[in-house]
Every structure is written in C-alpha cells, then in structure tokens.
Image (cartoon, each protein chain N blue to C red):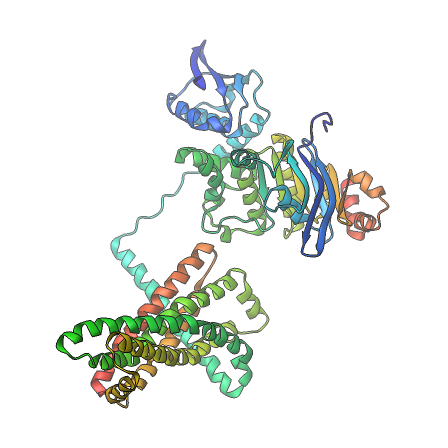
Length: 373
Length: 259
C-alpha cells in the first residue's frame, strides 16, 4: 500500500508529494500520516497533487489544518499538479476560521459546595413546580363546580375506556394467576400442619387487603402512566400545548384533569374485578389442589372476612390512581426539546409512580394498624 | 454547462405510486443530468415528497424503475445499496436533525458510522462542514432546539454534505424562512453547487428559489412530470403550469431575477 504523503526538503523549504488514494475512504491512513508531521515547519511549502487519486474534501481540509497548525502562513504554501477544484474554497474557509476563532473558554469547574447549592436550588424549583401543578389541577376541579364544561366529559369518557375497559383482560389474568401462586405456596406450607383450610383465609385477606389493589395499580402505572407521559410529551414537542394556550384553552384542563379523573374513577372498578378474579383463582386452586369444595370455600371465606377487609383495599385505589395519573401527566408536561427527554421522562413517570404507589401503600398499612381498620 | 453525452444521474421510468384507490403517480418519467439544479414543482398533494421517497428507496413504488447512476435502486445488493446511499446527501423538510445530539454531533454522525476517525479529525470535519454552509463554529455546540429555522436548514445541509456527496436532495430547503434567509440560502446553494460540482434535486414551492437557482424544472401535473428549462416553462400552455408561472407571485420573482 502506498504511503499517502511524502515530505522532503527542497531548496529553502519543503516539497510535499501526495500519493495514492486521497478520497474520504482513505481518511484514516491520511490522518495517521499527518500525525507524524513535524510540529513546526519553516520556509515555503509546495504541495504536489499530481499523484493524488480522487482527492476528497475532508482529507484536503485535514492537510490544510495540519499545515496551519505547524505554523505555516497561507502565503508560504503553494499547490501544483492539478489541485482539486474545491481547494480555493477550503483555503478561504481556513483563513476565515483562523481570523475568527478566539481562545476557547474552558467550562467552569464547580466546587463541591457550589454544586450542592445548585442541587438544592434545583430541588427547590422542582418542589415548587410540583406544588404549582397540584394547584392548577385543584383550580380546574374547583372551576368545574361552577362550570361543568371544565370537566370535558367526552375526553373523560375516552380516557375511562382507554385506561379502564381495555385494561380488564390483563388485570383479570394477572390477578387470577398471582392468587393461584399465593394459594399454592400457602397450601404447601399449611398442609404440613394439617391447616389446609386456612389457605382460604390467606387468599382472601391477601387479595382483598393488599394484592388486588396493588397489582392493579402497578399494571395501570405501567400501561397508562407511561401512555399519559408519552402522549402529553409528544404534544409538548409538537408545540400542541402551546397552541392550546394560545387559543385560550388551559392544557391542564384539557389534558391533565380528564386523565386524572378517569383514572380515579377506573382504578377502584378495576380493583373490584381484580379482587373477584383473585378469589376465583384461590377457589379454583383450593378445589383442585386441596379438595376443598366450593360451598366450603365460600363459607370459610365469609368467616375470615371482617367488615373492613374489602374496604381497606378498595379505599386505597383512588389515592393510587391520583398518584399515578398526576406523576404521568406531570412528567409529560416537563418534556422539552428532544426525543431523548421524552423517553427519559416516560421512564421516570413509570418508575416514580410505582414507587409512590408502594410508598403510599406502606403508609396506609401503618395508618390502618394504628386505627385498627 | 450541461453535458448531454453522459448518462443521467437519475432516471425514473414510468413510475407508478398509489395509496389504496388514490393514484398519485401514473407513468411518471424524470431525468436529472450531471451538474444540474433540478427543481421539482407541483400542487399540494401531487406527490412531490412521494417521488423523493421513491427515488431514495424509502418507498417501494407500485410500478416503474428508478435508476441512480445507471443502477436500479430496487435490485441492488445490500453492500451496493450502502455505497449508493453514501453517494448522496438528503435534507428533509423540517431538518430532521437528531434532537438529542448537538449540531456538531449531527454532522459527525454519518462520518462516525462509516469511517473510523479520531475525535480530533471529527471535530475538524464538523468545523469544515459548518463553515461550508456558513454557520459560526459556536453553532456546533448547540442543540437543534436552540437553533432558528434558517440555522436548522443550514445544519441539515451541513449533515447532508458530510459524506462528500456528488448528489444532493433537498426537500423544501427554504420553506419557513424569511425572504432574506431564503435568498441567503439560494446563494449558498449556488455557491456550493459551483464549488463542489454538485447535482441538486430540490423540491420547492418557493418561486424565488426556483428562478434564482434552478437550471431545469419538473412539474408534476396530471400524475406525470413535465420537465423543461424555466424559459420553456414560461411558454408552456398547460393551464396549471401557466397559472403557476404567470401568477402574481411568479411575475414578481421573475422580474427580480431577469429584469
């Protein structure tokens, strides 16, 4: 393979012969050769292009830059042997670049305390943003008492359908399967003590108090929380929300409140379905694995229930719903500028809403414990 | 300036495109020769962008053939396809800059993909391409969302030029620009066309751009293309072409460039 350039002293200065492939494809080799150039060159330089094949713009540019880094003024460089037609243009651009570019300002290194300060300010702003968002939602709901149109019934209906009705199959299936698993593990342990029948208590209390609502909330967070963030995020990127504002409409009223309300309505209903499917799963496993006939299962079920078992699960559903919907829509409204932001904030929306749901569930557990609910 | 002896760069033969029952192109022929600036014109919905997508191989046409440099785009092997794609540059209507990369990174993207170059060289090439389209070096560090419309068009052109194409496709390069920026873009295009010996295919609605830059024009009417020089178009009796080139806006643009 031919070496792409040969530098030789000639008279007072230098002669540079360019050889072989000088197209963009040969750039890596040319680049490596240019690296071996002396860092300072003096005297006139003659570049001979007669042996260069298919010279490309990028290699020619790299050559010019290298020569000027070596301290050769443009007046000292001459070209012969049919230089490429764009060379004049590149020389002109090179000259512009040299005269225009001043020293670059290095980015400021931040002291740890300054960084802490910045972080605190950022968190403070963030908290204010959340409060403002909650306030806007409250304002719209407050208005709705005086002006029913603020509720956007048609949009509410669409979101109830999309977040609720279409979620029924997956919620049912998962609730059923998980409760079968819980009943199966319970049966394995309890049958060692001959306490098979308490599987019914286990399933009933676990499903109604915790699992029904928690599973539903997590599924809905994954399905609808992400959808909320992505839908609103894309509208932000397309300036659709700005368009709404410019037409005198309130994006919180149009986009956020219908989603929040829809989820608050839908999640308790989905929870009831999940509860029913969970009990069905437990009943089925008891029948098959433990030979507990259905009448006995339902009798034992009623025995194990206290007046609050069902409600202590269901009452959490609207709270979870509000958390999921608000996190999703809030993150959607935060999307700015780029597709990457959209992806990042959608992920944040899902992770954060699941975290909030579980945190809230823990707080509920403590609360119910204290008030003996 | 036109060399009629060599094969055309682009040859489209009896192209057909339809969406369901809606026929967009029916037997459309088009030829673009070396070193031309070829303007594609047509009313809204006549399939200018569909034609571009067919030529670029982004859309499989329902009938007809598309040849670039004498090779059928449809039947190319994957390796040939890749080298063909590298031989042309495209700018899209809204720039289509990758929003999560800076302008400089956008320009470096195709170079990074196809060649293994050092960071230093990549930076220099980004500088070169930005300088070619008349953007300040500082613009390289900005994200697309921080650019004005005119800068986005220029940055998109810089990215299209990164692989040193001989053929450029521009989809409405001056739409959404103010007249001064649009004129500056026309001048830039003419300058690059002369300096880099480019062949340019440009979809445009901008009559000023059309009169200022194009050597030939193809008009999509009645699902076909009628190609001619601008002077020829002005004589054309077809009602749509006549009203297009003799409307109030056209007369103003023409006066500016000829008178």
